Figure (cartoon, rainbow, N blue to C red):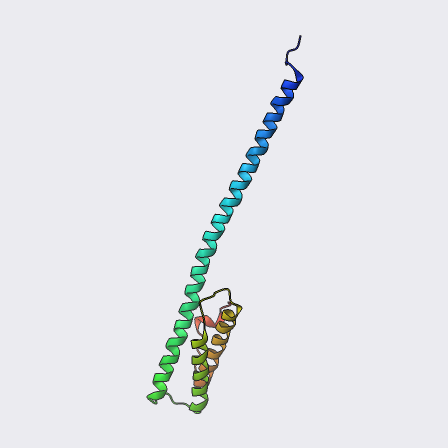
Length: 141
């Protein structure tokens, strides 16, 4: 008398159970990878927009700063010891501002231009005699 039937039937039953477990594991893994990729793209897009906005805002502040200093220089509203050096620093800052290209955010040159802008703004502020730090003084790229 055989209570468990034919042994080959039992082997097939356990093999089917193991096969189902393996298929479910593979399916869960694949779904997890796809979900991770989707969430990663969404998060990186959000961070990219945020950082891009911050950089464009910073460059906009610098552009406004240049225009303000130019206006004050033309109107002789600044009491300066050496206006020629300030005009040169202003011209260098202006040229750098005009050379920033945001079309390819992966370009390493963009990072270098932003760092150069920051240093040129600090130099101009020093030449004018501005001592109060800006919020951008302690930023890292």
